Image (spheres, rainbow, N blue to C red):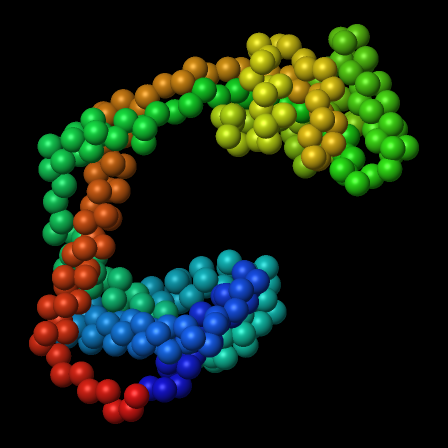
Length: 283
């Protein structure tokens, strides 16, 4: 119905606004056309799921609905989301039910029938080595004294003095983790500054450069990033490795099946459409 189409467009518009964007007037007609096609496809798949007997049991629906609500901080946040989408809880629950029916249909009629041969998975592994390379990693801890780029020189000087005082304690042999819990102003302070394993790309460049120069047990001098001043110690290093085919094969096969799934869904929808009567009663 027009109401359903308006709801979908409102959802897309809200998503754009949340990202700080607006939908240009020149694009609105095309977007509505694409949304209408999506709604038609969804309706066709739902009808097909009912013809083939893929019924959602009340317990299944309740479980999925509770899982969706659990993604929100509280009931108020969930209710606000419904308000933003301009939809009642009853209608939203019906949408969830229909979605689960379609999911069952696609899993049984398409996904479970797809096959990825050993030759296909091995060929993908051999021809895409960059997907399976695990870069060099370090496990490090840090102590952070925060200072902003636009803080005045007095605050920066105080932060430098504080981090140097902590460095003196580290150099004197005091425990790095205990000092992090006492002095660090970063979120990892409760873990004794432990940041876990990371590769060079996961941290800002000055931090990564300093961390990857260290050997296990070494402590860096003062390091400046946009977050403030750091002391870094490396606990462990792991060299660059390549995931073995045998280890990655189950996940690789699943990934390749999901890729095939996209093409298969398109073909399936096209087949269902060819057997359907679709009338647009207004433009």
